[in-house]
Image 1 (tube, rainbow, N blue to C red):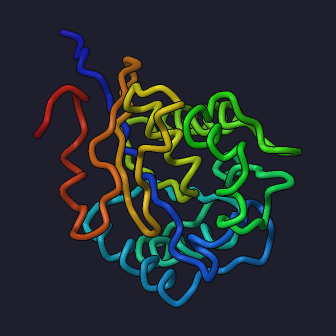
Image 2: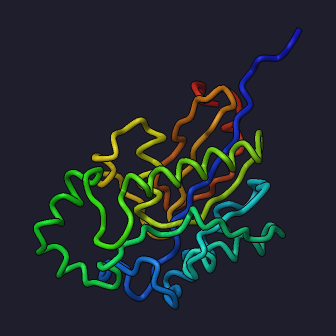
Image 3: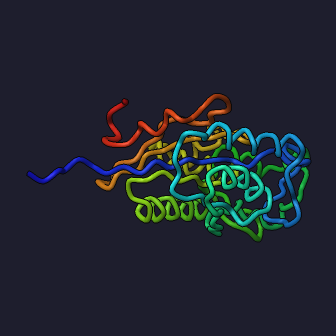
Length: 221
């Protein structure tokens, strides 16, 4: 008899650790932004939390802060960090480097918060394009590592948009999702096309238990 049980891939979604400008400016894709001391500690904590969860691969945004967050996990597992440009931060265009306190005053900020699917950053990327590349990356890597466990290190907005898609929520609701620095979320992608979140924005405690979340996405172990 042929086994028709869906084969599931576990995807860990990790936001980079805190930087000196976290919560103050919109850094975007500007180079040269590294982790703050707190961010370094968060990166080490991620590696510790993933101890006991065998990973097959680690992927990261090209940005320094994401690769630096992935480094302790790579060192602990003996895996290389594979850079995938689709995991990069949103292209904020002319808003790159702007103070958040200034952006809050702009009338466009209401669209960013309430109707992001209708917004494109001046000279930059739209939220729709950002979500599409993240979903494409997720599905391709899940297929590449079918039945395994992989970690993706990225940024707040791209991860929030991805979680919204995994939850079946509209993009216009993605701003309600919280993805903190150094947090780990987890999703399951099955080869029958089903997908969903296992945990969102986890910040403390061992994550070794996630290894049990393989099999039918509709069943909790």
